[in-house]
Amino acid sequence: MQIEEKRAEFYKEYYSGFSHHFSVVHKQFMPYDPLPGSAVFRTAAAKRTPTRTWKWPLKLRYAFREEFLEGNYYRFSLGSKYPIVELKYALGVKGIWKSNYSYHKATFIGV
Image (cartoon, rainbow, N blue to C red):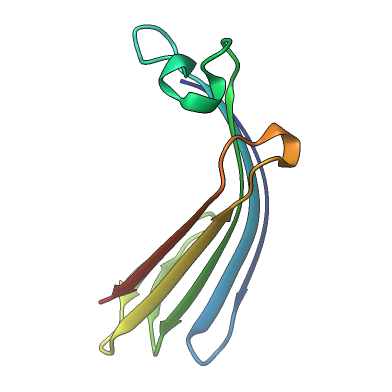
């Protein structure tokens, strides 16, 4: 797929183990042949135009006493003895920068 993505992100982590991650993402994609083209999608069926999405994802996470292994460029979680809870929510908005879809997406993970 030909994908063009623009994003802006803000991430904050607190000493208590709580963190939040907010971003704005604009994605445009056009599949190569033999993948299904834009005719599969109702909004782009008239002509071969890229499919576009504009979304605002938010992630809230609580991991009490989580431990990490850190290097110069990467950070890996070693987990926690306590439960880790994560809530993700994304709002897709139709019409901004020719976006094709409106949607809500929510995910809750408890480990």
